[in-house]
Image (tube, rainbow, N blue to C red; front, top):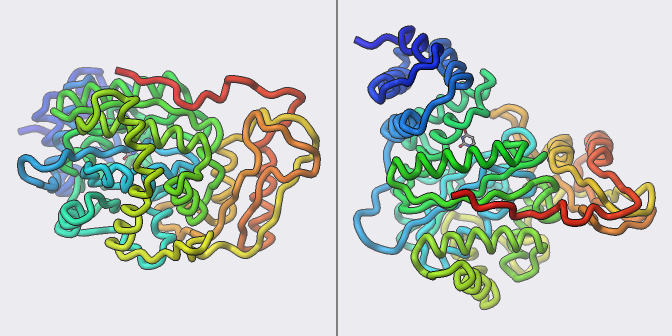
Length: 436
Ligand code: URA
């Protein structure tokens, strides 16, 4: 008979756990027989002692087995998903899922809500009137058959062990552990019934992984564990030193994602979306080379096929958008104020974290899981790193509800910018690496 204290002691001493021990702890944690305080102790032991790839795969399998898996049966179109570890201004999924689906890839995408300064795709989508952001398993399958993609929040049926464990990690300082992040992400992605996964591992001030070295470590862990679990994973490392695109804030980001599908997206957002689309297309065996795949993605946007698919997808999840309007009919906060440059020069810093926090000050994010999010607030950057700016020119425009939150956000956003005498040059390279 296994017992939790012995398992905790074993990991505490740095000894490898068996698959049986890991499964036993997880299963009994889900039923409540292993208590929060015992699981907290094990998580902290894992945090300090780590887990090797076999243990991480066992942990992933145990979490996956705690719930249901979307079953599409054998054959059919390739099923490929993209997942990002999250960064300020990252609205890629909103454009990428329908883009890939317009090319015949099935994209069953489970996504999350925001916590802290990085946004969450579900909150962005919930700015769309009537959009149903949590689908049942039956509805998910139907969406894949009829539209080819969906984006939905996790239900209680999918990887419930992760849901419980993540909430515990969040309050015990054990989120930023590579094996725990790996098993958390992969258990959810494996439950989608996909054949391949493209991971955008973000690093920098606006991301979860601050350094490139830690992002690379996470990428390697995802690759190795994916391989052990029979899931083809490819990874791309991208920087979130500054926000992706110009829009930060839920409704504003949906508008920018639609502009991208109209061929009018900001260059950095187009570059990351194009790269991830190409990775998905190659993973789905629809193109032999990434350059061919990128051409296919560009054609899907230029021909309007991706936008057409976006409209079909949003409507199928109940959302109503007014495409004849620049604001798509989304509610945007009425108090709009520019933050002006205090000197002339070049933008040398446009800190993603500070800008993400500024949007939280406006009410656009959540500090704890039960907080309400104001979808209508946010900011549009007018200048980013290396841009030339004249004194008095706007650096950003705020969309706020009231003067109080606006002042707080403006003060924070001011600290995000540094204007110097010269540009910083190549330091802003966005797409950094492709760990294998
Ligand atoms: N995203 C997840 O789903 N899990 C983690 O642990 C971290 C990021």
